[in-house]
Image (cartoon, rainbow, N blue to C red; front, side, top):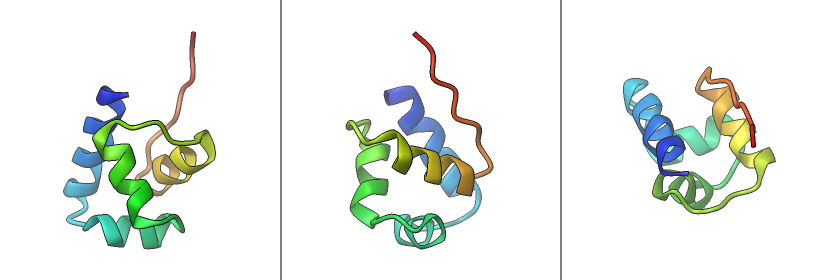
Length: 62
């Protein structure tokens, strides 16, 4: 989860967006963005919205 957290944060900063701006674009809550960037567990639907908004691809593997 920490690798995802780092990549999401870096992608957000590359767009020069605040957590609030990313949340607005992705239609999720700002606390959800913060949880992702901390590496906390979040549901895949929320993570998918964030990834899509940032132009990232979400791959799930075992």
